[in-house]
Amino acid sequence: MSLRDHLWRAGERAVESVPEELRGDVYVVSFRISHGEHSIRTDDFTYPYDPYLAIGYNTEEHCRRMVDETSAEEDEARWSYAYMLLEEAPPIGHHPDDPVGTELYLAEVASLGLWYDPRELSEEEIAKRSQALIDHFDDLVIGLARHLHDSGHLEKVFGRPLPIVVFDMFRPIEGEATAAANPPELIADYLAYCREAEGYADEPR
Image (cartoon, rainbow, N blue to C red; front, side, top):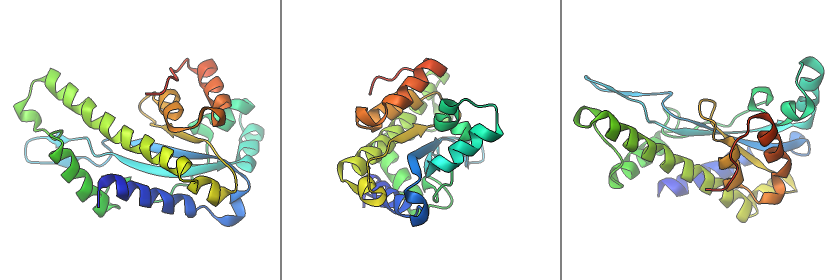
């Protein structure tokens, strides 16, 4: 099984894990990417690029509650991950809770020549190689989102198409990544919020 196949299967299961009684109230699926939260340690250095994906969702009820209980505007409460419910399925990828994903990830980045030993490279080369690893996992996540749309799996579970918001709490990728992950008609309101709030680029990669 490839890393892509593992992400696709685990992603489908994550979507299916949303409680049936909430599915009618869900308006967005969240894809939270994390890099470096569970770093690999050796005797001489810490290797921080161990990415994983956590899939969650937000509901109309939770959005209304955030508007009532905080000072957030309606669009901010609806689209900013700071206000989302983030009821997440188990992590997928290079994470202690996903040993299969970890094994597949390490094998794939090694086969692609992306893995590196920072003791052997300059700071400039480390930065380039690190970015290549980040881009590799981001592309896998965007591919999973497209698969959930194109296969009809998301619509099958929720009974209607839903946008998938892709974000990383430590990198401003949400506009561009979300645009790349969704049919444009599903995310017009989200991208309008991004442009107004932060000026994110939203051209698909």
